[in-house]
Image 1 (spheres, rainbow, N blue to C red):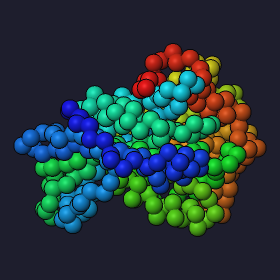
Image 2 (cartoon, helix red, strand yellow):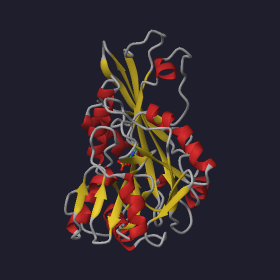
Image 3 (cartoon, protein in one colour):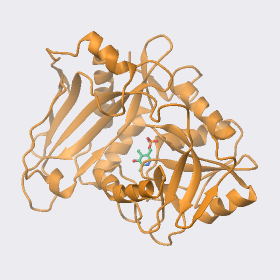
Image 4 (tube, protein in one colour):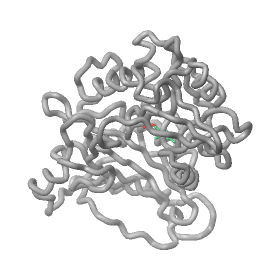
Length: 359
Ligand SMILES: *Cc1c(COP(=O)(O)O)cnc(C)c1O
């Protein structure tokens, strides 16, 4: 893909931008530009461009609106100590989006073009990267089916788009443990399904369970496996770890029904380097429930790009509750969070080459 650059004639003025950056809400305001590339079976990817951010016109019969043929990614650009900007493992997002496209029968965005698009947008809208602890520019690449027609088959045309939104701390205020509702009725993904793909449909299917969590006084929902209703999977949009009293970390293995988080993978690596044993395996939810009572599970946390690492307090289900440890953010949870953020924000060494300097 070759990106034509067509800068906006009407960027947001510096004063208005400064006001937005002082207090950015997650995913509500977008930068001056976006990237778009078009796909057709006949022409392949073409007309790739960076242009002014703005609405696109959608035919009501577009495939995406009816059959949900769409995938997305999420990654962040972090301001570095010298004022430059870096991405964190963007090539992993590129590879994962290609895999998601394959699962949803969408055309794959070439991985190097994905990374190039991210670099181009971040460089162009560099002034939109917020500074401050936990702040970043959130990048949202996505591919969607644009063919017009109600016949059920893969769309012959698609758009790749990339937009960016300045974000502050995902959960504002001091880090507060979140409570989880253990979904009894709903599952997120089944073997052979789309659980390992980052597709809109997975999120659509999780919303009613999230509503149920809120109705039961919890912040988020955690899902069990679809077959035995016994094995921990993940939250609606985050992976999960248990910390044991001997310092071991335990996390569900990526068996095809959970989304393989890049944060998850980074934490596995960092934790091992810090001397923790990490077990990636099936995790019985009763290991958590019993462990919270007998003291063998001392901390629980969730992780993902948007919120980095979020401490988990209570696990609740109809008529019951389990709280691992003190219910406050745990020591190992916070240590791992700091170690990961220090790499992302360029405050620590980057022995794995995870950080890609953009500008
Ligand atoms: C995106 C996502 C995650 C986290 O992945 P990261 O690469 O760490 O951001 C976890 N679970 C689901 C369902 C997701 O969509």
